[in-house]
Image (cartoon, one colour):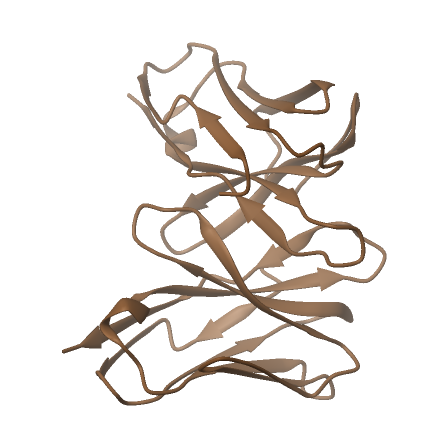
Length: 111
Length: 113
């Protein structure tokens, strides 16, 4: 079964607005990562947040992690058309050397 | 794509035929992974490798085998392809130890008729 589940499955907003995606997971993790996938391409790593961190920023990206609720959110501020893509959370399990991916959120930025 | 190539990029084959997909990396990474991506399922791990001749199963390994005889190459074989194996296959490597992020290849689109 999927470790990470994302919400919403699809999100459509206007350029310039903020986009928020959520991820829930089931078991203890070492870290949680977010990836972006443009249509027809491989995934690209965006940001990693460790289990002992609560918030992390990278450019227009802000990630939060709540280990008590087993959830994370990815905020993209001031969205651009180029942000149109699918976004996946992935959990790195303690004791393992592998990631478990969620089903992804398809984000569409309308000009 | 962090020096990761996949071949072929596209393949159409018939049910029952064997198929081998190749992943090649140029940066001597220890960990390599094969995923499949299907609508509604995200990415699911098929097999992974933690060194030459060291491999382990992922969550959807049935019908697939892998081999890693050299650090740079990780092969995924479908012994007898079925229509349910129609998918996009991604290879990935894990970056620096302690960092855990993965870098992905461009993908192989496989269609089994």
